[in-house]
Image (cartoon, rainbow, N blue to C red; front, side, top):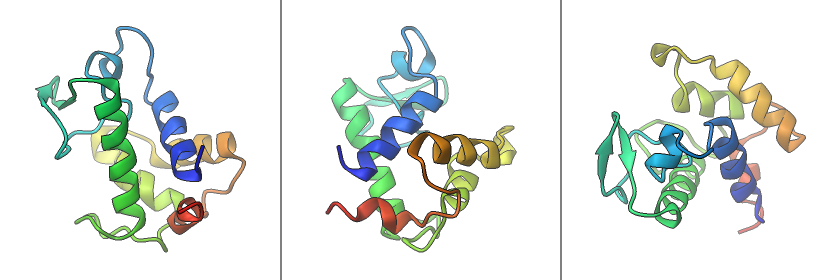
Length: 122
């Protein structure tokens, strides 16, 4: 499993992927709000026709953010904290720092790890 896939898997776990959860029902392991791969929307989140499509969308979203190919202004120089400030913003009643801390702990890295670190395997 690549580093980027490990990040995606940690996000899947954090987002609450379990039977009958929103992410599970929507085949959306990252709880993405929108994706060019989505089939539609349910519960104000992207819906995918299969887990494979949802997984690809999560991976692609993280890859694009890590390479500066999104309107979020994230780049490979952005930190894990900056990623989760965008991914799970306070405006949605999230705690991006707690999210970043949990993911960092799970991956045995720091919250200051740069997104380009996840691309080393490519």
